[in-house]
Image (cartoon, rainbow, N blue to C red; front, side, top):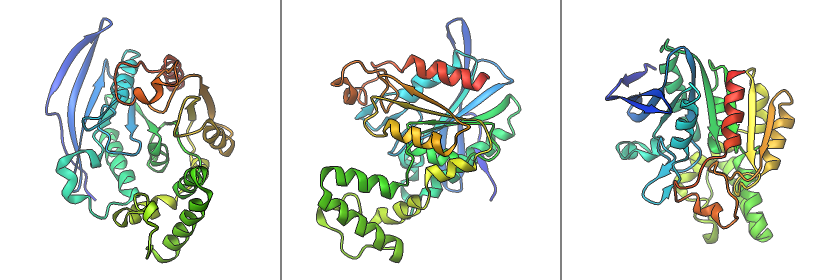
Length: 305
């Protein structure tokens, strides 16, 4: 499949901490899907980090619509640019209105394909010495699957088990009875490709239009996929993460003993430093919360090692 791209809508230079940061707007296409993104760097012949999104309709800056305004990807970009590391992030296919008419029938591996297209584009960009994937949340698994041709892999808040097990666990924690119903629904989905009669109270989880995506996603177990990586691996999780537990990071590390595991105190799922529990969810809706400093120093040290 031929890679199509439209390169550089706009080139901008800005000054930060005495450094000139060059920014380029790039559009990469995966057939009809448009993946506009921002490339930023201070100089050439440096490592390039490509960000791989978590779940939701996330844009290149880490925001979703007019509600979720954490801006955590933009903060991450700014922080590592200051360390002379290049960065590219793009609007996830589900966040770009131009793609909406093409999203019917989307499956999990379509997101892997998007990342592969981005990697393929930058493999031909000789301004950068290597490509490093940073996969956040759902993107942790996507980055594992798309990592061919990259030099290093970083998992941020990545689950260790397949999505069906995660969903069953979450539902069981609220209601053991409905946990068993969810388990039966998944069994039927795997065996027949459909669920004839979804329990009304679980309709939001097992919506008809989402079943192909969930089934495809559930075929991949992160703890098995991480074993296949032959590049250096860094696994990071925060102890204030409400969505992915520290135990997930520990399980990934157990599956890949050669990896480096770093658990960060007071860091939540959107990578913010949280002192008060009440601020945990507030940080999803505001850019006023700072990223964890330990996150940045850990990532930079791993990249430059």
